[in-house]
Image 1 (cartoon, one colour):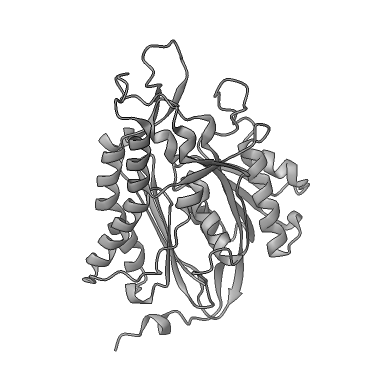
Image 2 (cartoon, rainbow, N blue to C red):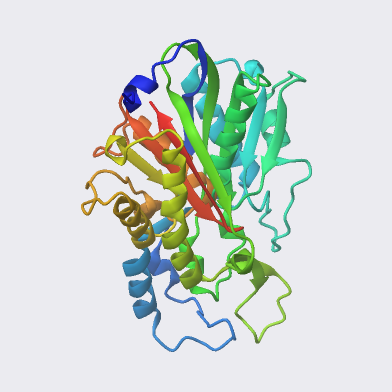
Length: 370
């Protein structure tokens, strides 16, 4: 007789990869949708959008669910807010920073200083800058960066798990930090999607008799025509002489891709451990687009022949915080753990899924037991 999922999870003397602390930084500057009323929104060929911005913004909010987003202050950078979230995660875990073996930082644009340009600064790495700010002297604490699109933080979590399982690390600091407000085009409606923020966790290898922590993971990539669904491109202001490039996206292409591929990738992660969907308590998905995320989860349930999606399965914070790329999932996790989302909580033995999709195009998922 086949053992149940819970019975299979009770093994002896294993190394579990467990989150022991979390922290996040939500920037202070709140930018509401009304702030974009005067933006000269244009099509990609430079033609001005004739609809007034009231209609443009209303349609945007209906599709994405975003009402406001957060931007960093002028004197803040990606590495600085990464440090703040890291410090909070370390304090939450109650550990000595000198005991951290690896610092893994997910971002996409590095430090972009508010000096009138959007030149990316990633030398030294953001990870090295965070280690410096934390004052860590341990020469065997190795910092490095991941550039993997929006799924970067989850990929960092997977990297940490692999290092721990290989015996190369005991404790890892995994950070997702992004300052997208410095790389958006004011002529592009998609500017309203993007936000700033940072989130971090401390993960530790623990020798335990019952399986918990990271149970399985999956990563997939499609880089043929999908490669350019998210890219760095010219401003939609075709009548200026701006040589600067900005973050661009093919929204409809991404939407269709995500609906088709993300549910399959999540199911693949769950199938590795034969986890029934009915035993999943929360799905912490990248906060990209409220309508898209809801459709992804609905498609996932359909793959299992389930028509009704539980109302509280998918916590959302995009409404007030926007899409901060790699920071959305760790920020969401930290807010739940800190009791900042009253309708959601995580209890011992809960099964949760971390999932994301983004530039590459890349998708990943982690099945995690609290």
